[in-house]
Image (cartoon, rainbow, N blue to C red; front, side, top):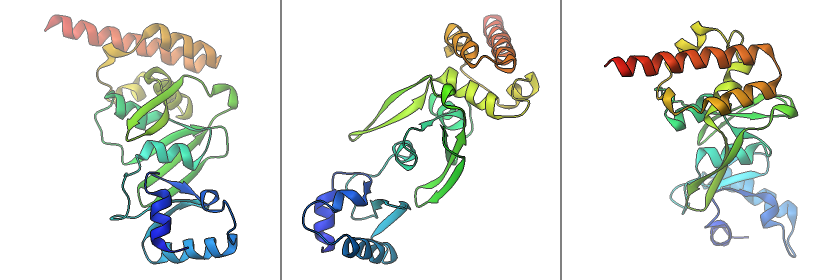
Length: 213
């Protein structure tokens, strides 16, 4: 396979897997050797074993970091600080993408940045939806209430008022309290119920402060 053939095949695909190139009468070993050669030549980037993207200037569509996160670990969804920053609930720029999954925790350092995957039990994989990212890209991302609760759950002492205040949360009036309570109950843990109560107080304080201005 020539490189221009590869570009023609994956031109409209932000990221691609080796299997996409193995259809038909091809030599799998030859394809893998070619991919390795193109990685070393800087023409493509390897994101993980078997997952690649074209390097600039060859790529037509720049992969969205959230879509890449979903592809790195199938069954994961973007959550915690990354989702909260996306929704505008925390002011800081988040330099890495944080996701939640039921497989072991891991980290990937790629050409697109660093990806962290936090482990939770399968029963806690809820409260997310599919987000349209444009350019035919989509990603699974936590609802804002679930992103906050995931962060609390995964952080020692995450239910304390001190920790929640340290996040410098903003736009709290956009949180849906009924959804927050429902998700906290679904965790079935006292820590999560305490966190939901702390959040209700923060939302109330925020609304009171805005009313006084």
